[in-house]
Image (tube, rainbow, N blue to C red; front, top):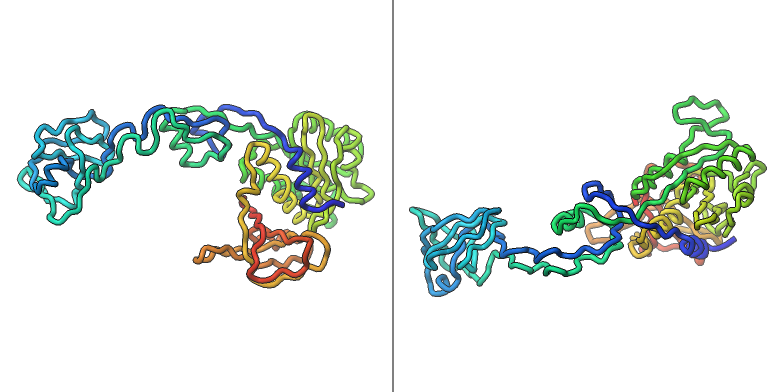
Length: 402
């Protein structure tokens, strides 16, 4: 049995190296950029008016002039106009190009307009190019705005559109198969007998995968039949980059998954981790570095193992190291765990106005008590190297929504 840290290292060392695909920027949903973004021109590309108001000659104001006849109006989206008389002004709108001959903008709030003239308030502190977003202030033509391998969020979409990249290279998301096992499981739409339960693990796993942008998912259910398992897994291996199996990996008489995978040529890299919940976790790799995760069948164990191991591996495969983004939470109360195992403790988090995130432990009746998880936000990781965890100490936080 290996430690949590060792299991993590083994899994991450075998993560896929995804290739890229091309998508339309209007279809982007959290993809990982796989190309640099280069400025196709200066940004802004002209001296851009930043406030509605009047454009004037700064030197005239410096000399004490406060009254300016209105010569013209410069709207956004029209060619640059010229301030013909330095003693006059041009009304300008936000987003317009600064008229030639003008080098400062006074906002409407600081002027009074009457009888075709604008009068600037006395005592105004004005600077040259005030209220002007100067050409090239953000970046110059040819500048590399981003080198890639970042998650494309809303600001990135705006940048891509601004530089004219209507299509962009992103990491290809792996094809994932989620497999539930067990004769006791029936479909969600079925009415279970007294000795049966509805399938729920696979729905929880797929929900978490989709929340992380992994939408290329196929779902299967296998009975506890050795031949059925071997035949189905053989086909699933051919069509999948990653297989996530829930159940059938412990030491029960009908836990056929590990043996079937090995017979199919999947190399077992570890089986069992020093952790609670989720000790029976199984991991192996097949040809072309395909990854196979055998998650415990208990609902909490299955979901926690997905967030602790599977999701970090999937994100690494598309170019993102989740460890660098891992949040921490501060325990709200002392907690004792006297096993020499890493403890994954479900918690309810609270965001404090002092900037801290606090975690209150959630009491479960066991690893099968998934209904109590409804009150939790995620879980924190408590090291096997101690058994008493003090209030006020911070620990790694894994959120269900992440």
